[in-house]
Image (tube, rainbow, N blue to C red):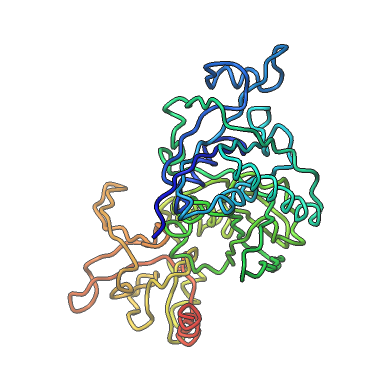
Length: 407
């Protein structure tokens, strides 16, 4: 095994929070810190760098926000590291990245060895060809030696790790170097028609992964949900450029109706879906989010009381809640079940209206379903459930869907 060979380099690619978060996640990167470099005055701080970002006094060159990286080039090569730098931002933007405007956000590589300088120039030329072929302009990135690096204030260090419910800046052009043996991703995402949800992600975005793993892991709803990179979107009408990842787009017939930027919790996501699918003024929304109750013997109750064999699913998440095998006619005018699907619901005390009842909540989406009582035949429990927050799926369709999920 080759002896460890630590090297140092610094990158400026917009706000240093997201740049540090990205590079600190790469295997072979041993240490990162954010700071200021590339200027010609001593002891810069955040306030001074911001004050000089639009114009500087005569003879002064402002520093840029940068990330100093210590890496083991036996694990991650200098070339791979610099290629990642080109890919995560737009090096054709002058003194800005997206909505972050000013000379402190300029694109820059600060090298410490001759080899780093040569690789920076070589990969710049290669990337320029790729960008030009995709219709982008000229690269404006500075390539300079790393002189003094002034460490930024402590609250800036690993900022996005300290604030886990946030977002990653989405400044990438979407243009990637083609690795050896790797095929270019030519996937194009076009509108389905009708309502759909599109989550726009970016390369190695930890908040995108967190959204998938925590918020969306149980989603099987009837509104289609897809993930895509911004450059994969085609024939969509988007209101404005995507500057943040993840960005959740609510789409109808290919047109953006609304968006939510950054990581959101499961509760926030399902309320968003509730508004999008049900409408805030609907009875179903009132039941789901305001603990409302439908009228006895409502139309949906009549529709659902004699369905064929199958399951009732959460109207928002699509997860199974109750089985027709456990349904019975209680005469109450509300759908009644002896039990819920195993692990599908949660129960909690409800002291509203001066009573003590047990509320039933969907575990996947957190919406209100109804209540459970100890008054069913043979001493069994009765789950009294609002029909308007359910959808019915025949058992054959459910089995087919489960087979698709396993593929």
